[in-house]
Length: 224
Image 1: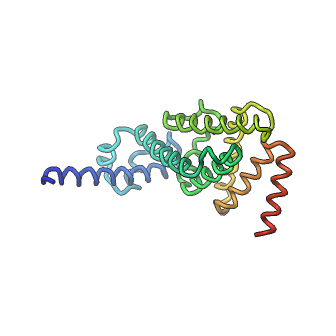
Image 2: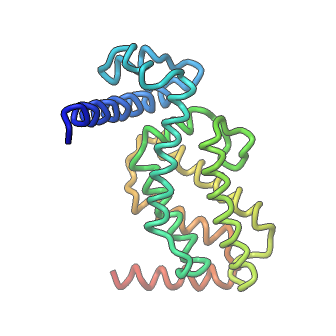
Image 3: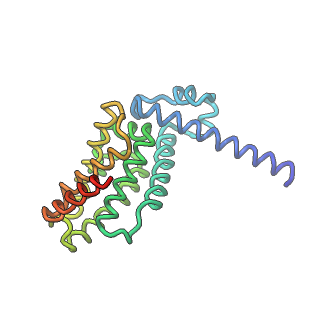
């Protein structure tokens, strides 16, 4: 490697490090203040870099906001793809998807609070602010709609409109996670997942299957 190439590599690594620090700080500022009240100067201070460094990395606050969402939605996609596979069946996809979603949001509380601070309904895509959010929402809804459709045809879920069911599920998760934040984020991922999955069964599964699932759950609890 030439000396010039080595310098460029070091420069790129430094720039990437600055970017991560800035995005971490920006996420917290957006979570605390919301987009409108957030100031780039506060992000620079929280990141421990100069304002000039921030603007050499991101041209505007809007660009920073989009980059925060781009980074987290990419991480969420990776997390979901590693945890959820189609061969798990309609119910398995949903229950594993719930676990993966709750795990991701609870382990990234700054990003979760940023979402909640904006006050947008997760069931309403028109309320989302940037393209990265809308794209991630659309992918998530499409996956849920497909799983609901398969489950309805198999007699697993009640017969309703799959898209309405998917939007309702998103709203339920938002309310449960918002409540977790408001009460001090004390419950574990396992506890939150278990309750969210039980709520899903009650809300969407046929009475017969829901009763069978509860019986099986009690039996598993007794064995444990």
